Image (cartoon, rainbow, N blue to C red; front, side, top):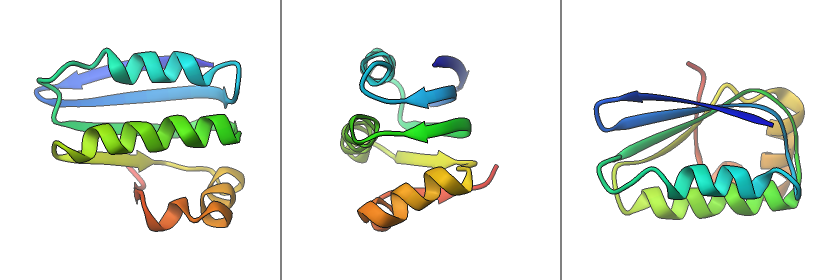
Length: 100
């Protein structure tokens, strides 16, 4: 997994490539934790994510909870197989999704 960070004022986009699973989710968790208090809005761009495990779901939910205290988090550009995981687990009812 790779994470590309793009900052625009108080909004950060993390473009993720690869798998978000047990092995890689700690890296995403660290990237979110490192954002700092000045970041008010987070976009997780999952256009290049082809697999999402339960560990990845947990990490995304933790990021959502962290950003909920601010202006929020958006999950963007989700591929159909990954969106199916969000739908089956009920995360689609919790998270905000967009196509950028």
